[in-house]
Length: 397
Ligand SMILES: [Ca+2]
Ligand SMILES: [Ca+2]
Ligand SMILES: [Ca+2]
Image 1 (cartoon, rainbow, N blue to C red):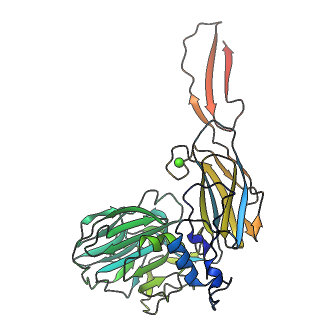
Image 2 (cartoon, protein in one colour; image 1 turned 30 degrees about the vertical axis):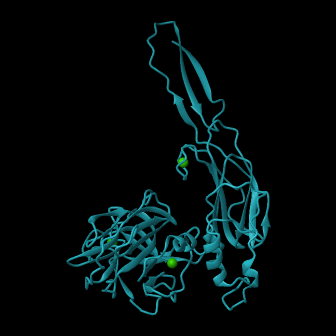
Image 3 (cartoon, rainbow, N blue to C red; image 1 turned 45 degrees about the vertical axis):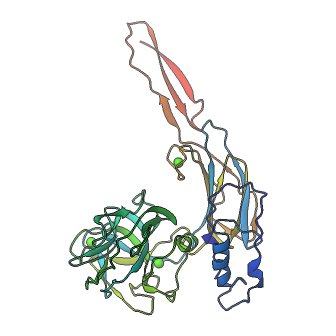
């Protein structure tokens, strides 16, 4: 299946700009090519054009971003598809976890990846005996044989209540061989130690330290362990794809979609639920569906192409005043009025007006006054409402 969600568009380009990429059209269709695109085409295109938008395929959304406020900065537009029917592992932070039958992660390379939403990432994926490997410990990824609890950062904003995709990769004795990624973007990397991961001969747990403490609180999904370090290009291209379980080099893959904590890889490292741990429905924005982000220098017309047709799209935009690449509470924000909608081919008129949450910029000050005198208190506010943005009231006493 060809998944356009892999194209995260990070550079600005004017809407009329077209990058026509047609190599896939000569590929032989296969059973998996449901829309006529060979899976190899995605790899080819991803390697040739890792960050270019595609056109002439499936759907596109376009419209105009308007904003009449005073804040400045680039505008980010995001189209995300949320597919229904997903199930996840839910842990309440008190005695809940899943234990697997997997006990050996030894070797020269590994990748641990998973989706997380919640308030504590502790022990998301954890193996520990006399050594340890923990993906998600105090918001870090740590390996006892390489840096101990120092580890590397798993990223910011992990516990903001939104779904996030986390990846840890490790490859023995490699420049930049210990790396973490958040939502497909590199968070931190450093050179790795030149000793292999030891065989800890201990069960791998989801959400707990050996079932006794340091519990995660939140939801986990799409937990995948690979016996090799995925490359930055692979992660950029595939981070929000659903796996099938039959991918080469998978150690194990738990997606909970059949209502069980079973390993969907051929290795069958099935897990067992403990405490109040349960598997329940929760749809993850972007998982297995379309997902694209576009950066504009300023409000105006935009187009996002190369999105797969289907239901569950939402389109939003914000003005990145502080330039950090994500939406902060005071930044102008807008959402398409017809969210969510079904994309079928070209969707025009996906217009959004950016508005700001009102914020007070000047507070009234205490004033001394005598009987019979007037005093004026002034408060000034910025934002899209209320109107007017400043005012004064005179009080007589
Ligand atoms: Ca519990
Ligand atoms: Ca799932
Ligand atoms: Ca921002």
